[in-house]
Amino acid sequence: MMNTKVENYLVRTAQAEWKPLIEKGISYTGIFVKSLRSDPASGRSSSILLKFEAGASYPYHNHPAGEELFVLEGAVTVADTLLKPGDYLYTPPGFKHAVASDTGCVILFVVPEEVVIL
Figure 1: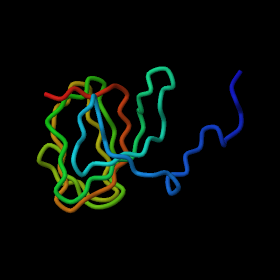
Figure 2: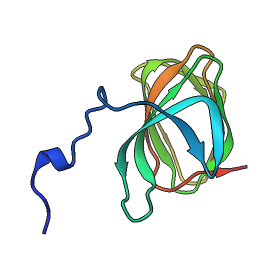
Figure 3: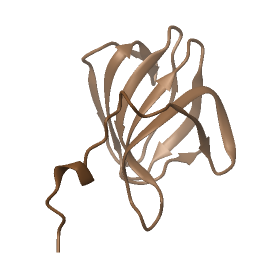
Figure 4: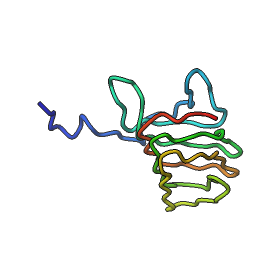
């Protein structure tokens, strides 16, 4: 039976701490995460906030199930395209790219499946 209390599904992001992004034992310098929605069985988050410090980057990778991102603060470069606050990007399954921020940024990501670093 579904729990109908909103509090069980609510994340108060202002009260959550930024944690270093660590995937498969690899820590990405200058990138921090807040989990918004995760699968209890796998422990994997599919909806997250990512914060890039100025100069941080994430390596070239593939999205087997695509992704959605929305820039909340700062600026970020995805596949040689500069995105600014209010920009939304959907990348289809199999889309490969790197991500970097010269100035720092905060981005909302929805990633249905784990990325594959290339």
